[in-house]
Every structure is written in structure tokens, then in C-alpha cells.
Amino acid sequence: MRIIWKNLPIPQHPNARPAAEAAEGVFALKGSEAFWKFHDLAFRNQAALSPESYERWAQQAGVSDLAKFKAGLTTHKWAEKLQKDEALAHQVALDVTPGFFINGVATSGAQPFDKFKALIDQELSKAQAKLAAGVPKSEIYVRASKEARSAAPPPAKKPTEQADEPLWKVPVGKGPVRGSDNALVTIVEFSDFQCPYCKRGEERMKQVRDAYGEKVRIVWRNEPLSMHPRAEPAAQLALEARAEKGDRGFWDAHDKLFESASKLEDADFDRVSNELGLSVEKVRSAVKEHKYTKEIDSDQELAEDFHADVTPNFFINGRHMAGAEPFERFQKIIDEEIAKANTLLAKGTKPADLYEALVKDGKGAAALEKKTLAPPIHGPVKGNPNAKVSIVEVSDFQCPHCRRAEGTMKEVMKTYGDRVKLVWRHFPLAIHDDAGIAAQASQEAFKQKGSEGFWKMHDLLFDNQQTENAFKREALEKYAQQIGLDLAKFKLALDTQTHRAEIDEDVKAVGDAGINSTPGFLINGYYISGAEPYPKFRKTIERALAESK
Image (cartoon, rainbow, N blue to C red):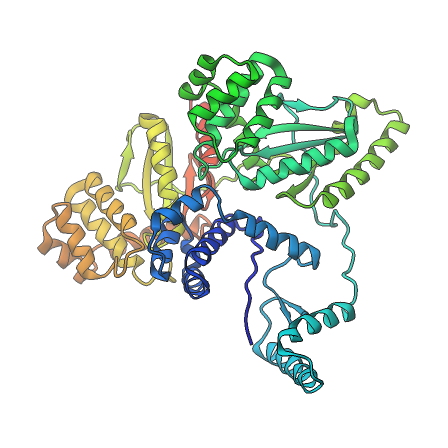
């Protein structure tokens, strides 16, 4: 038997697509054997999917030209393969993972081995019969899969809007609009100028405009992802074009930028500016000074409110679609919404009021959750101890999601400085064997050198988290020496578990607050669970600052 891999990264898993591109890059550079090595490493370390991991696993799989691998990821060189795989999945009506076709016979989900064995034995028997009848080996799969396809029942037709699919009341706001304010259907689009899937999404929007004309309007919202460093500067250019030439100027810039999606350097911005008759100096200034950051931040916060955390995302009269789905999916929803809109018009709704009427019963932005967890009386603090806004971080040094959140915390502290204070509470999870001893090491650093010592140990623990034996005694003692701790006292503290009671106290307090996972953050009581994007923290901190005045 042979196994052939096809990609179907689903939108709910934001790391799935970058990991798939990385795996395809390994395959392109070093072949199948290297791909499966990378595949095995990724699944064994599924919680640690990150650009750093992809590079390390690629090397372990045999990729020697790391610069070529990194360049391919940056330019999304292997994204087209994912698009072809996704199109194939759509063609065979596969929309869940994992899915398997055994000589064309479909089965989905992580079925028991016996189920696979029965199917494989069945197909082996059929194959032997074909061989005996004179069918060449090279034609067995083609014939078997065609037979399986013709014998399979037609896929059940699914309603575009499931009963449990929420309707969202996404505000139109003051974003750039393409189309009539009296349109029957409003599409609010969250997108990123450097994202290859967004470029494909724009092809879908072009098909929509060609098919429906003034019946549909498109409202743009910026969502430049951090993994695309030129997306935010491109958004600045587009908004400067709008400032100079109105919505028409924005959409002209939008089209030019997507045409140049793989080339969004400063020289490309100058070229686009000249072609559109914009002021090159004003565009350069907008990019350099981040002139429209307030508008972009507002869009990103809105994306967070409505769980549009990947790009592209579309809300079609409030009905959510993630990703650049085939045009037929858009067409079905739009046709249904046009029928609804015409019904409202017949009942007297004014054209300008259609969108609000259609989404009036939709879900709005989720309210911020609150929890009660006080900072420790004597614990490590970063920032201004007297700040009116406290961020209590609940974390585990061995948790990969906690490590990912540290980049966001650094951005928070850089942005807000003395206006906030960050305090730490330990919550080493039972599934992480070495998290407890790492927590005790950090507490001994705090005892010997105060907050400064704690945060130095904290940084070393997270910086080395993904290296082998990062939290074993030898490594911990090395970190202690690096930050100038008294090594004899440090060893004694670990030997006698001097700080066990303090950590247990944190664990109890965290549990009593109703928190059972890491990382978690309480910003003046507003709770954020997980390694959420920076815009969510910014929005919550701004609210806490406003309330503390």
C-alpha cells in the first residue's frame, strides 16, 4: 500500500496553514522522505507549531538550504499546492479532517484500526481480482477509485446556513465601500494585502461584482497579520489613497496592491503611488509615521470581536464565511440574501435600511468576561508598581502557548510603559512534567534578586523552552549562574522545594478564580484566555485605562 498526503487546513486552526506550507516546502526541496520526517515532528510537537519550529524541523528532516526554505515561506511559494488540495477536497465534498480515500472508498475521522483493516483487506481482494483479470498494476488505482466514486451515494446537500450558525451584526462603520448604499447584500470583508489567500478572495469578490453589480456592496476592513510584515505598510498606502482621492482612490490602490502582492517594498509603493497620481511624499510619510494606525487598529479590534482571526473573512449580510471559498458558495448565500432583501422591500423597508433590518437579530461583539484574581501580595512585578491598570499573568514555563504569548506581553509593555504593571502567578500544569521545578527556579531567582532576577530567569526559561532538556537540573543551574544567583542556595532551594508552598498558593488561587488553562490574563479583572493577538489586549487595556481615570 501507499499513502498520499493532501492538505486541508481548516480556518479554526490558525497554525495549520503555515505548517502545511512549511511541509510542502520541505517536500519541494528534499522529497517525500523528508516530508514524512517533517510530518512526524509536527504531529509529535503539535502544540509547538511556529516559524522557529518549522525551520528546526526542516533542518532535522534534511533541508540544508535554510535560506531558500525561509524565503519560500515568506513569499508563500508553496501556497498554490494547498489551494489545489483544497479545491480537490471541495470537489469530493470533503470538509472535515481527517478524511481518507482508500482506493477511492471514503471514510472520515480517526476511525479504529479495525475499520481501516477491513477496508484495506476489501480493496486488496478487489485488486487481486483485477490483476487476475489482466488489469495492469499501473491501472488498479485509477479503475478502483472510479468504481468507488460511481458507487458512492451523492453527498448530502447541506444548507448554507446551519441551524446553529450564528448571524452576526457586524457594523458597516466608515470603511471604504465599493457599491451602492442601497444594495440588497452587504459583504463586510476583513483582509490583508500580503496574504495569498486574500488575493484569491479578491478574485471571488471580482466574480461577485461581475455577477451581481449594484445588488452587492463590499465594505473593506483592514486585518494585516503579524506574519505579513508588509501588509500594514500597504494598508497605510491604501488609506492615504483614500484620503487623497476618496473611496475610488482606495479601491484603485487596493487593486494595484493585490496585483503586486508579492512585491510590496518601498520601491513598489512609489511605483503604485505614481501610477495612481498620489503624492509620493505623503504616501512615504503615511507609511513611515503609521499615520492611519488608529483606523487599522479599530478594524483589527472589530475582527477580534467577531472571531475573524484569519484572513480573508467575509460577513455576507451577517453570515460568516472564512477563507476564499469557491464562487458557488458565495453565490448560494448571496442569492438567498437577495430573496430575503426583496421580501423586506415588499413589506416597506427602505433600501437604505435593508442591511440593518437584515442583521438586527444578529450577535454583536461578545462582552468582555470578568474574573476575580488578585495579584500576589509579594510577587514579581514588571512596570510601574503604582499603575492603575494591573495585568495578572497566569502561566506555565513549559507551555508552548505561554511562550507564544510572551511576544505579545513584550509589545504591551513597550507600548504602555508606566501606565500598566505586569504581575505573575504560577500555574504549572500537571501535563508538563518539568513546569513545577521551573516555577521553583524562578521563585528562588525572585527571592535572591527580586523582580529583576525573576524576569531574567523567566526570559531564560522561555527562550530555551524548545531546546532539549531545557528544564533539567543542569540547565536550571546554568541559568542561575548566568543571572548571578548564589548557586549553593539555588541548589538547596530546589532540593528542599523551598518555594513549593508559594506555588501551591498560586495554583489554588487561580483554580478558585475558575481558570484551568494557560496562559490566562486578567486586566483589571477583564479575562483573556490563551495567546490572543495583540489587538485584543490593546482594546482591553484601553478600556481599563479609561475606567481607571
